[in-house]
Structure formats: C-alpha cells, structure tokens
Amino acid sequence: MVVRSIEINSKATMVALLFLLLTSFTTLPVNAQTYRSGQHVEPAFEGWRPNPDGTFNMMFGYMNENWEEEPDVAVGENNFFAPGEPDQGQPTHFLPRRNRFTFEVTVPSDWGDRELVWTLNVNGVERKAFATLRQDYLVDNMVIASETGSLGAGTSSPESRANVPPVVTIQGDSVRVVRVGEPVDLSTHVWDDGLPERRRDPTNTSEELERRMMRRPTQVTVGKINGLFLSLNVYRGDGNVSFDPPLPKPWEDTRSAANSPWGELWLPPELPEDGVFNVTATFDEPGSYILWARADDGGLYHDAYITVHVEE
Image (cartoon, rainbow, N blue to C red; front, side):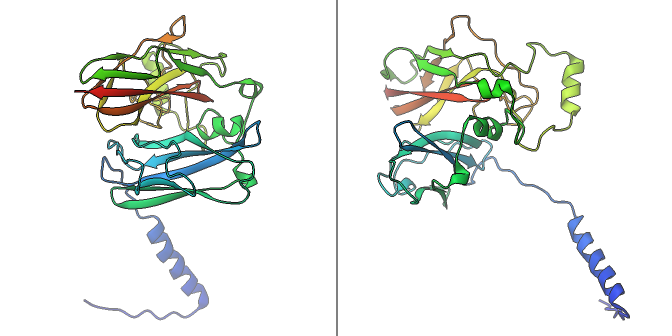
C-alpha cells in the first residue's frame, strides 16, 4: 500500500477537505433492516388523561419490531408493572409492529410525580416504559386522532372536534367455554356517530389505484384512512385463533394490500345495517384466552373483551 502525504497550506483547504470527507459518509446508502421474527418488543407510554372522579388513566402501547412474530409473554418476571400489582391489564400477546393506545391503567388522584413503569423482556431483550403525569403528556381526542394518523400533525376541524368514540359490545355472555376446533359466535354490535366521514368510495378504478400508489405522502405523521371498522384479536392466550370472516388489522401495517387502514389502498368495509358484525372464532389449542374487540372510526376507538376457556 502506498501512502501519500498531502501538504495543507491553508485553513481553507483543511475545511474543504473536511467537508468532502463528511459528505462522502453522509451520502453513503443506508440499508434499513426489518425482521420477520426474533426481535424485541418496545413498550410505549402514550400519555395520560383525567377521569371525572379525579383519578387518571395512563395510556400504553408498544412497538413489536417483528413483522410476523407475535410473541406471548405471560405476566410475571418478563411482563410486569411497578410499583403496585404486576398485572395491570396489559396484553400478553403482542401483535406485529406499532400498536398505539392499546390499554390504560388507572392511578389514584394523589399519584403526584411518581412513575409507573412497564417492563417487558421479549426474545432476551428487556425494555421499559416510564409513565408520569407531566403536563406535556396530557392527551385528548385531538391528540389521539393525530397520533394514530386520522389528522395531520397539529391540525383539527369542526368535524374532528365533534367526533365521539364508537361503542362496541360483544353480545351474549362475557365468559364462554368451547372445545378445540369448535367455532364460538362473537356477534358484536358497533355504534358510531358517523364522524369522521369516510375518506374513500367503495370502489377502486385502475386509474385511482395507480394515482394513489404514486402519490407522495401528504403528512409527516403516520397516515390512516378514516372509516369505521371492527377488529378482533387475541389479547391474552398462547394458541392460534382464526376469525371468520377476516377483519381489518388494528396495527399499523402500511403495506398496500394488508387489510389495514394504514395501507394506502385500504377501503373501509361495508357496515351491516343493524350494526351487528357476525364473527366466529376457532381455537387450535386448549387454554384460557382473552379476545379483544376494537371499534375504530378512524379518529377514535372503543374496546371490549371476552374470556373464552377452550377445552380438548
């Protein structure tokens, strides 16, 4: 190897060489890596909101770094809250990618400046989310709509300010007993005020599809297509559960054909006239499961849960 020495005769030359060196590094291509499995889950504190009785709800979500793996982590040394009871209603089944405002933990009116810490250890990597009542973490409906992509960052409208969350109710008993392979009926009623209005027509022409695929992003936050939908997923439980018919995803799958409101080509589903979605769930393993129903109008959401004990 031949090393040549360069004589630097002036400060200007030195600055120029330094600039060229820095630019050569910053213009190198960066290969972003994504993973199907094997990665950790990052718990997230989303903010807090006050309750009429003086208590506060701390809001949590998570980022599962995997695109396919849905880890199951039981409440215990790898999934717990502190201080207080380790079980604060957190999920033990984690859907792929970013899931915002997944659940809330109520703390008393005298909570003060203490921290509530959610610890997760997934695939050997421990992460923590630290929740406080600091004023800059205060959340309202406009923040939720903005953070989930219904609105652009820092924007609102009379329609969005008038919107109220939908209401979801799983009809029938809140606890069911079924056998492996035996479908259980989960007829679910959803009410909504019709706001925000749907952003999409029920059909797509080839020209419209091409136009949307080629369009640049219009906002710096995550984008979401407004339209009422129901999702059903496993919240706690280790086995596989199949839902019929398949429902939209509640997580931010941005791929075009992923049946997710964050996908560019997604269309809001047609809604039943009576507001009742007829869905069945079938389990492939015995155990106790908590299923999670979320009604989402694009801007706001409401959750319901049902416990199913599955026998051989």
